[in-house]
Length: 124
Image (cartoon, rainbow, N blue to C red; front, side):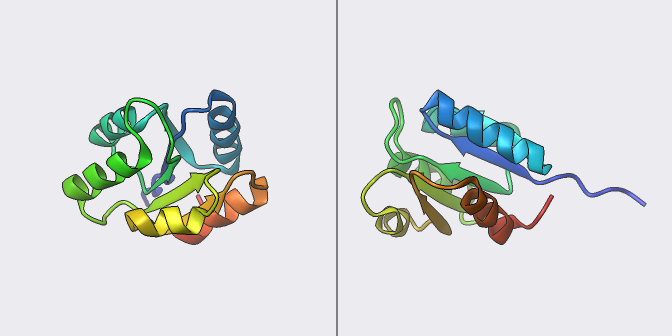
């Protein structure tokens, strides 16, 4: 019997400390994790291997979350779930603007991040 591969989560976040924290926490939970510091890098990672979920910051240099989301949907449709993680005043509004599947406002508790990921793609 072949073991199913662990789900891949792509984190697109320009804050290196938060990126590292999310990456390490999700990896410890058993997810495979890829990272990108901006939307352009995020699209490059997706071209290499499609994740089961993208955790997306909205305000980043090079390519922001709005542009990333539009290009993601143009290229892949809605096959890849998208969750907005932002410090913007209203994370739900930002998520609605880009048609995201979930949202989480910064700052957040790790428990909330784990719940968002598990609710969206299941446990590893």
